[in-house]
Length: 240
Image (cartoon, rainbow, N blue to C red; front, side):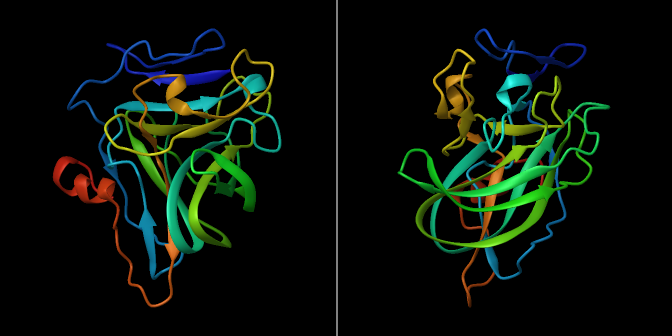
């Protein structure tokens, strides 16, 4: 089951979606959660690769129940291209009161066929992302991961370790006005195509997810070089 947090007039309610998951409402222009974060680069000297622009039009999405199956059915991923070593990741998460109760996640680096994740290149298991902001806020979480060499297109992402649970530990934030490769791994038996799918098949507005990669290249200073990050300097009310 795929769940979304949905902006409502009075309150927020997670919407379950076995039968056509969708957003009951989407935040309009200007209704973007402010994002604040003191950057904690897990591998100084690395570049931060992001596809989102630092603001998130919907609050987030997550799998629960039979949508979360080991080793990583129910994972979310974003695709990038680069040469170097993936040495860390950054995630934009949000949750509801009482939902985060010590759940852990596994962080993955996958190869790419240009469209979807392929072979697992590396995994770091049992990561505690730390305290996650309560919606309407979105918190940014830098995590250290095992070094993985990449050369060309690749994907990074996470699997929330709560198989069979009726509620998620958190939701990953999504962006409606940037360009990325938002992907999710769909478990069998849910009535959807199984395997890696574009996350916008569940809501056509999703253009990228709050998932970024720290790419280390010896001798290259830290920089925020993606268009999403550059654009956010001029369009975002929040800071990263």
